[in-house]
Length: 382
Image (cartoon, rainbow, N blue to C red; front, side, top):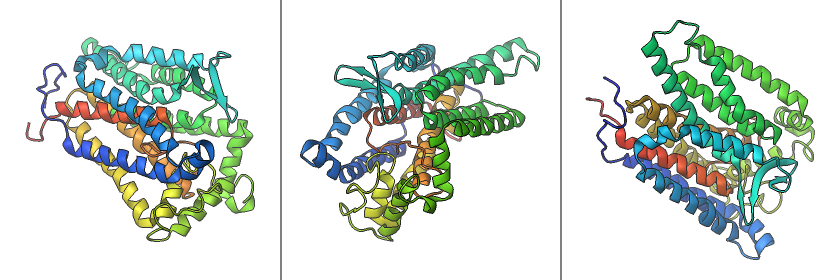
């Protein structure tokens, strides 16, 4: 099968199963948020639907607008605009630190205030880092193939690490280690998909683990999260409180749940009930069966996404789509694992579900880009 450029590939109908799975995740996420946010919405706004309304108006509407735009622009534009998007993201990550512009909460400075609008560059990086890496990998491989370069020049590891560091270092200063982790793992997956050797992948994983251990040791609150993960019972009212309450919520849901809307933990017992703990609230209300169905939707998203990727001949489209599928499913699995004590709680949202306008907008945009690329797949018979 010869590789085709997106300009020469005949477009066809996009992948409808992927669209259906994405729509199910989106509507399910909004329904779960409406249930999880009721108490907080009454407390903060005097009615039970303010948070989900904001999520739909600001995050959902913006995401659909961006995803719609992605369906209309020429397919070549994605590759040509990759560098611009990457540079703009770096600038935004640095603007966060300008006094009077950057906004902080709970000891972190992650937002840019533009009057009534706030922008979170870390969420934008979830799209633009895979975007630029895909274009960069393809350009480098093309140069090497044309020039018949030596093995030394074929080593892309050092410049690859520099690209990831340009995004990662500002995020670490915010600090936002969880986003750095998601983006780094996504980048390593893309490095593998781009043809990185097993030795280089092993080096990346080993170096990443050592760096992670160092970063954890440097910050007491990160050590506390590891301690809470390993021994949540030793400080149930301190560092282990959130994970213990999440486990209580999940366990009390049983097989069928307490019933939709009847979670007790969301009534100001469980921290972040509409943020990184929203899965525990849903598991309490919908039980094991409901939680399993939600996980199945994410696995279906992964399966259909990689079905699209393996049928894309164009290497740029394949790598970009691979990065987008990876970060969405990886972040979902990390969030869920943290809520059931299979991994430390790292403070990341559940895509499509948790409250966060920027998070939802970038998730919808990512899915929209994958959907657009699905128009350029080839059948197995070709």
